[in-house]
Image 1 (tube, rainbow, N blue to C red):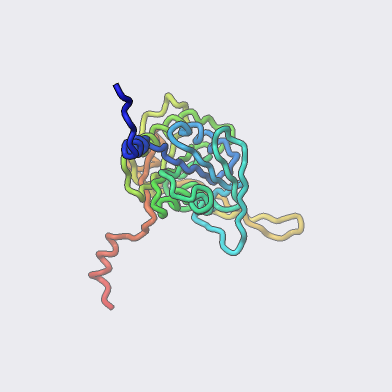
Image 2: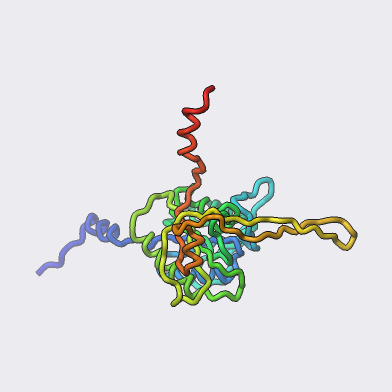
Length: 273
């Protein structure tokens, strides 16, 4: 029986049937060597091709700042086995921009930011470098997720955070998502077996009641140190703060469009120009 001759079309068909692994961009605001980003890499590295582009130093509270008027530097590191890793002198938002333009040369399939050391629930999303990186990806039409663990310690136990980060990323990768999808995920700082599950929530109206502690330096000049106490003004049971207080992982869908559409409708009828 003569051997079957392979045609060019059959070869092309075979190649096209091989599905490429998704490209997973990972960044953070605690710096490229922070334990949180290493735990996030470990949680998802077998789900696709992971590339890390993260700040070379902590950038907490940086918000959506970008670097203008100063050069950005980027250096390749060999600190995570089997994972292409870059550190930059820029902000978390800068990292996403550089990753797309200079490292990946295309948009990744998903961008993950974190795992942040400390809460990014409620109003914290506005100030968070972690979430600003995720929002920057969303602006660039890249589905994104920011992860935060409610523990500021560098010695924090990330077992539960790894488990739920992987669970959520798997579901997002396996279904076609809105290209502007952006999720703010917070994980309670309790033993993994005490986490009750996941709740999709709204952002609570909760904030820091702030004060500036006035002090003097050794030369006698005044300086100010920001302090404050976190207050939850929202009694709803559908908020991220409520979920976290009751040992649930909170998932809040966020967006970069800050338009208040309900107020817009009211103003269109009330204001006369």
